[in-house]
Amino acid sequence: MHALDIENLVKRYPTGTEALKGVSLHIEEGEFFGLLGPNGAGKSTLIHCTTGLAQPTGGSIRVFEHDAVHHYGAARSAVGLAPQELNLDWFLTLEEQLDYHGGYFGMSRKDRRERTKELLEEFSLTSKKDDRTRTLSGGMKRRLVLARALMHRPRLLILDEPTAGVDVELRLELWHYVQRINAEGTTILLTTHYLEEAEQLCNKIAFINGGEIVATGTSDDLARTY
Ligand code: ADP
Ligand code: ADP
Image 1: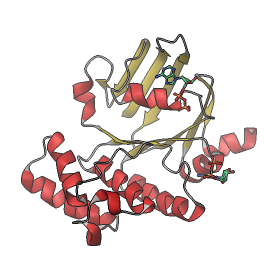
Image 2: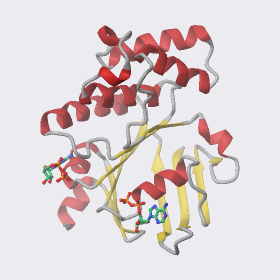
Image 3: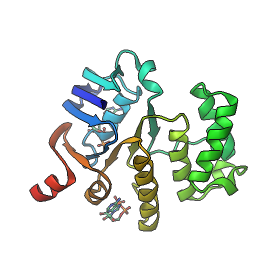
Image 4: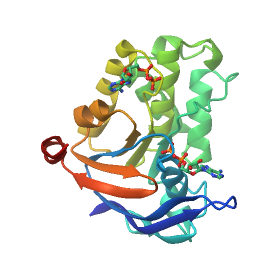
């Protein structure tokens, strides 16, 4: 089964910029897929279209067979998003943060309580559960963003430049967490402008530039070509 099918996706902004010029990509369930490209290539636009935050100008997006362009509601619960701009609620405690997100996705109180406990444990945040989000270190905030994205058990996790602007030590730490998430069965779409990051993490990579996919392959294929 395909986790994500994007066909001929076009996005033209009102300014006239054509950020996506007919992009197609296919991600199989279980894959760790990297969308690699420089700033301005169209990565965020593709993510916004896939997560219901922007309306495509043309083309189709299917998330586990659900039409994500016309009926985003059906696709919504299958997708978890860890946005680049860590849009956390800074005055909530960690526990409240996760619980609130679970409520938004219709999880029962009991399920929210159990899932929150499990995720705080998994991301080594249990000792901070009653602290306010704004008091966390940078690394903990990024881990919390991952935990929140996974709260409603999405089958597809989208990571938008998860390590942009972080130091080497924290980058390695985050790599470890996202590799484990994939190993546990969650399909991942990761965007990055770091070749090394895509090579390290992803079993399939697409290069995007100027709103077009210019190459796709396994990391081994691409290492041979470039
Ligand atoms: P990336 O995430 O790869 O850096 P983006 O998707 O943010 O690329 O941007 C792709 C192109 O679309 C760029 O030329 C950018 O300036 C333009 N763009 C992005 N968002 C908007 C917007 N809201 N309005 C107009 N142009 C935009
Ligand atoms: P930027 O220059 O984009 O702000 P950083 O300051 O975080 O990036 O990183 C400094 C250097 O480390 C960059 O030259 C970049 O090539 C490299 N680097 C940063 N992040 C990664 C990454 N995730 N994978 C591989 N190399 C990276």
